[in-house]
Amino acid sequence: MKLLVTGGTGYIGSHTCVALMDQGYSLIILDNFSNSKSSVLENLRKLNDNFIFYNIDVTDKKAVEQVFSKHEIDGVIHFAGYKSVEESVVEPLKYYLNNVVSTMILVKVCKKYNVNKFVFSSSATVYGENKVPFKEEMELLPTTNPYGETKAMSERILMDVAKADPNFSVSILRYFNPVGAHESGLIGENTKGIPNNIMPYISKVAKGELDKLKIYGNDYPTPDGTGVRDYIHVMDLAEGHVAAYKHLSKGVHIYNLGTGKGTSVLELVQAFEKANGMKVPYEIVERRPGDIAVCYADVSKAEKELGWKAKRNLIDMCRDAWRFESSI
Ligand code: NAD
Ligand code: UDP
Image: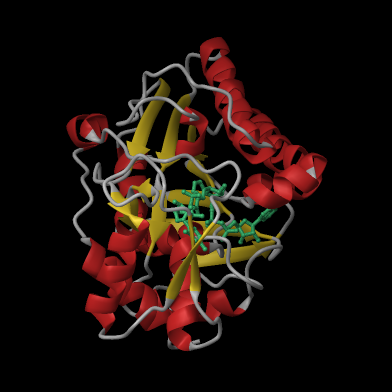
């Protein structure tokens, strides 16, 4: 069982690689290190070395074809892409070019080499301001940024391809808020510069690298006024990919990968303090433009069809996030 994983040295990709290798898959990992470090490979090898690596840009069709021509590939898991919502507003073309074109090129090469199994990283952001809990069959509402649009477009492209080719099996995974790190502390979320996402920000405050957390608004219609999200341990998310790959069947299947439970920013801060026995200073500031009040998943479809359910709790997420952050 040989799988090709794009973006495999990134945050979610690296954890999923470990989960796949633990299940006996051998991997071909592609990444161009545009948002990851080559040192991830050394740490991955300490956990499991059943992979080979190519430093390749997935939008380079020739280079991707060369890999497909050299190996018997059973399926593809496509993580590679840019993910900063803010940057996508400033540089939309960079996002459309990388995120949409990489998906099209990979699918085209898959078809040429008769690889018919494809798993795609999508995002809860495609639900826009639908009513919670978000369900897979909901009509997608416009997202407020180009990043979200690249995910919605890639989903549509995959649906059209599967409609036209009855042999193609696609699993679209809509992630909620992945946080935490592998229990070994060897891999985790290694953000460049000041983090945009909350867990790496909290971790840097705990470490003393940043002064205090800025909580973006406490006047949302939520129990304590702060934003509510569905945080999921990255290893649960990784295991969700293994389940999705094992259950691939013809056509397109969409799954939410979350816990189904909403947590407010203040609750997350308290959980971090409790898990790690430390204080996280914070201040309340203005809302962040583009943020929605509440986002959490209905996870019943993944549980029913994939037999997968998130197992780790908020304390595990905070403890593992800090274990990794304090080691780097
Ligand atoms: P990440 O930036 O840590 O990982 C992405 C990896 O892809 C990086 O290692 C980067 O170097 C690589 N990459 C980017 N463009 C490439 C290209 N053209 N060729 C080769 N490699 C390339 O991000 P992540 O958090 O691990 O996210 C993985 C996927 O999941 C992305 O598609 C992202 O949009 C999606 N996603 C992430 C989140 C999240 O909160 N982290 C939520 C929903 C969806
Ligand atoms: N958030 C915050 N301060 C930060 C970063 C995020 O208060 O420095 C809040 C944000 O408003 C949202 C939640 O934390 O309610 C999760 O934000 P994140 O950027 O991690 O993920 P998103 O859900 O926006 O993709």
